[in-house]
Image 1 (cartoon, rainbow, N blue to C red):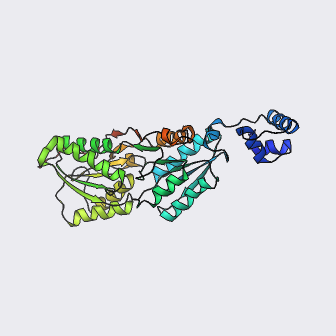
Image 2 (image 1 turned 180 degrees about the vertical axis):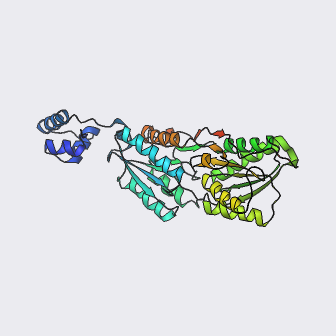
Length: 338
């Protein structure tokens, strides 16, 4: 059985969708005859107004937007599925916008909120900002920043515990005897890159002190960067016993190069990944990784968007952090040389 919409109510009552919407939002007083017709249509159709969507916007579309860099990776595919399922459960529509990590596309999609095409946005970017994006987000208003920070924004933000994730990976490797390690991750200008490295370095230093030796390669969270980083490591004959690859894509790209070069994991080189959304458990050996709660992040982001009181900027929630977990498998071996 189909669920009645605002349009259905308007058609039965013989009025416009805007009239029904404003009546339900309490922003329009109707003549008694019109009000009676609308209320009768609501009863006839068993129309159930969405209380969450009303908190977002007076010009309701009953639709929220999800802006992501890509839909092809397991991380973002899982995130989209989680947000879509939760939106459906709450009887909201979802529009999906893939930016290809291009700023002009991000800025264009942010306009959707200001034009009332959607009631709010869950926004994910994957590159540093020069202030342009932050200004657009602040001007749009009803936006939740997810996964990667946009510095200078005054909106709700939701991240995984990147620093703790780096720490768990570093501690796991250090306690297995690894003190010369390679960190392959995002650039320091990005929250995830900086926090994962800070946590990783803290763990290594706790165990090894001044004897810890950490090399760092910075780039995009992509298989291409994982491949180029692994090639650079091999070509430079970098003296490390372990690698921390800080995304599924980086891990997969690095493994392709290592396998082609005959480097055995973990006999020749130990490896820890991050995200654990992709098929890391299917590799031989299965890859130890820090797991992000991607589905929970998506569900919580939608809750933040719906439950925030957007009428009072002084009451916007602070940055929220969700815990990560180290999933131990078979890609780390004890060091047999120092």
